[in-house]
Length: 148
Image (cartoon, rainbow, N blue to C red):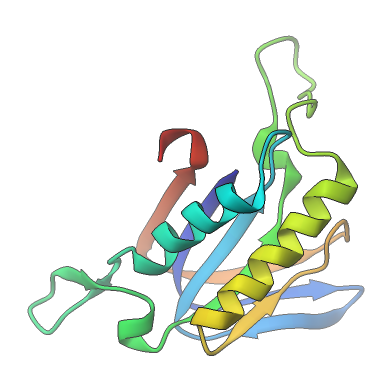
């Protein structure tokens, strides 16, 4: 499982010209589900994300987590995080999770995050989405469950 976490001052996702999800200060997270991922994998990476100290304290140190600052989440499915570009110029996505399994895990991630964070907005699994964000910093962190 892979999460690309961007600390934002605002972010939104639009589908067919309508805003589906919109947040203020928090994390916009692209979520890629791999072929061997499970709910246990999701739990581990969710815990890590929620507890990452990426926000500044009163001394300007990145010492505060999402909950500490009342941060919000925008969670967007992104199977292309499993693009394999080793051969040729057309990426292969064979390492991405099968759509049914990946959708179930994406929904599981959303539900688990809602247990911890007050505002959780989402994209739509499999939809053509337009994502807008103001990256704060910029500050971007990649979490890969294989490295946790």
